[in-house]
Length: 415
Image (cartoon, rainbow, N blue to C red; front, side, top):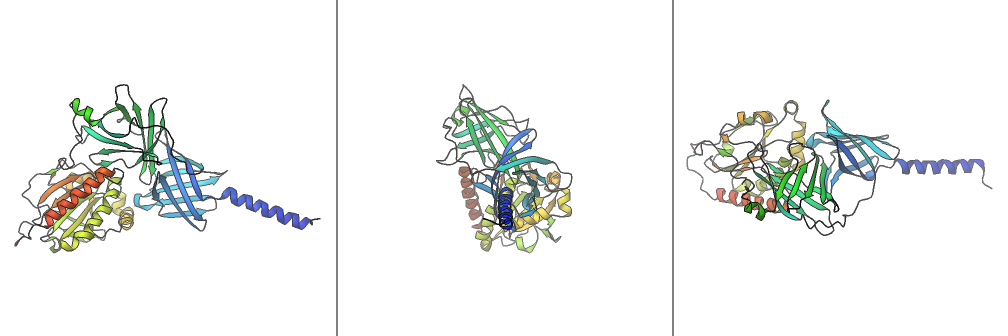
């Protein structure tokens, strides 16, 4: 017969085990965040032991890793320094409840609730009816008449969609279908923030596309490209035609401080006779995050042959005072090319006076060895849009090689 002491010890051990299981935080968590009255699906992956946890927001097969993970008791705080955002939640009754948003005090935050859940497999819903390329008719403030929509359902993978605009793509959107209603919902929730779209199949073969987080982008009509041509609808804007320069014969001039306060100008010796990419962006800009690794790869590949890259970063007022996000942006992508702090986003055209039609983040100016602009590329097609991303990489690489093949001017008086 067991003694009273042994029974108590067994009971305490069992209770401790149950408590540990009920408060375990590692694993996959699924739920929603409330954004502008809409419920946006959210997946959080946490791995490791309480003393050393890793976490990431999951978007299909993609992930946005947390920079830091802090678990104090039942209080979880994740930071995503490269977007200056945090996830702050409390673990109670088997669920995480909290908020997500900008770390700055007073910034708006999204309420969220998550529960433990296994990784789900893609549904077997037939979405062949909307697979492929579409063109969404729009009248955008940036002068566009059409956006590209791509829908793809890889074998054994979640259905994927992406919208390509002149300033870049939406990032990967993963979705589910309601075959009976012929509607589909696509979303993501990443360190950059949320997105939520619906696609509705119409009897005439078109799609109605609605951005549920932006009331100005609802019930947009999408056609297959061939049908759009029959309807004489405009194609998506060529990224090389969106922005030009007022005087192509004039050298492109810049003079801004780096993150340590040192003034860097186009007349500095390091740019003499070099091919220079001037990349307009900001660490707040998701498409600029997509662009940075590609620029770094170009820099490593061609710097020894005469390529310089200068990122003119436009940051909000609080970041100008203390550019912690820009530092995290540089660190995340291991940037070794020049990064300058040019001002606030609202000052874009005030600071870059030689450009005409400059309204996209990012925008890249390609300068020849004479310091003059040879081509301008608006926006960036990221990895979420593989065909456009691969074409862009190919075209830009060819352009850089062409510019590098030009002879170095004997006297570069144009600068």
